[in-house]
Length: 396
DNA sequence: TCTGGGGTCCTAGGACCC
DNA sequence: TCTGGGGTCCTAGGACCC
Image (cartoon, rainbow, N blue to C red; front, side):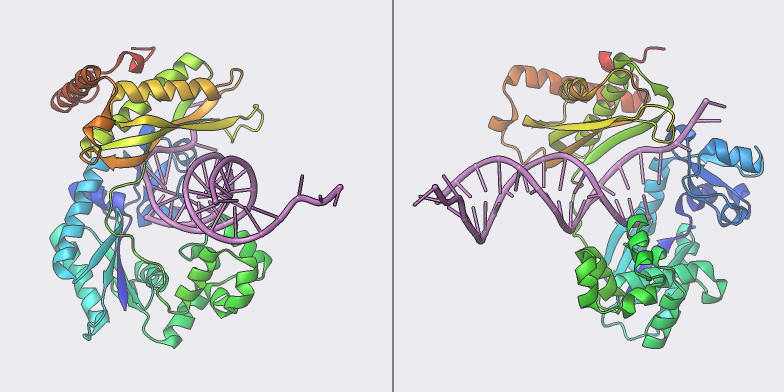
């Protein structure tokens, strides 16, 4: 058996931890730039506020004051997440953190009353860390996820739902629409419905061999998981394979120069992230796209990536390379709405031999020192104290 | 005249997740 | 006026090799 511990409405719960006045009322957390809703309290969900809803639409629909909206503070959420995970590690034999607000736990060989154990764990996380969690326990990760949804939705479970026999399993699957299953997104839902599969039980009860003729491997794994076979491995704790900085712009951008400024900022952010985690990136890619909601406007999107001659985390170098890529894909005559820079092939900065590191040792040394000084100033004196010339905003 | 095929690596795009 | 951001993995198909 295994379990999942899933924080309830995590970002909202973090805000409520430090702001008790937000408890027991509708409240949402907004994305960077306050563009869209990324977390909702139960009260906000009950009112009908949807995930990803644009902020302007929410205000339109619910009025300015009905649902307080808070600008997201990811640094704080990460800190709270660390507290939750640290506490859980002390209480469970083995834990794999799956996301900022979820962790799977191994319960193999635990012969105690799992339901009572889970209820106690949920209560003690709330008591010691101040964040509500729901727990699902089952023979596979996908079933545990489904169990945790029940624990979340129905107070009668007392924060923990256990699926430990076939009758409970079939009952839970019957009540779960296919698109609420972990691993089944929008595209697969369409395919499922086309094949008359509407609930999780419909999928589980189909033969694997028939499914294999029309569905990809990922769906076959989900099928097995729903039958109680644990077959989705947990990734070992590992450094991230990519770092991305992307934004939806509040206003559309047409000019190459303005876009170059944004791209420079994204590249600088990637470089900073890399330096903070003591890594270098070997690939950089840039994408730009128009507003797909504005069907009245001409559409264009493109992306391009490049293998760097040597891995880097230098701001100046990433900006230079990103602007080169932007130049290749930029087309005049379009209004751009979203863009970003992503770096891949990340390696530890200690793993790269000095001989591979640079071309011009002197120039490298200077750039490195410059980046380090900029990082220190910016962290001591507030963000954006010192920035590269190309990052300068036109308005500033 | 007849013009291989299997293995592997790589990449872009598609699918999913929170 | 205003429509999230940061990730992972899979797969199909091209390039290349022998």
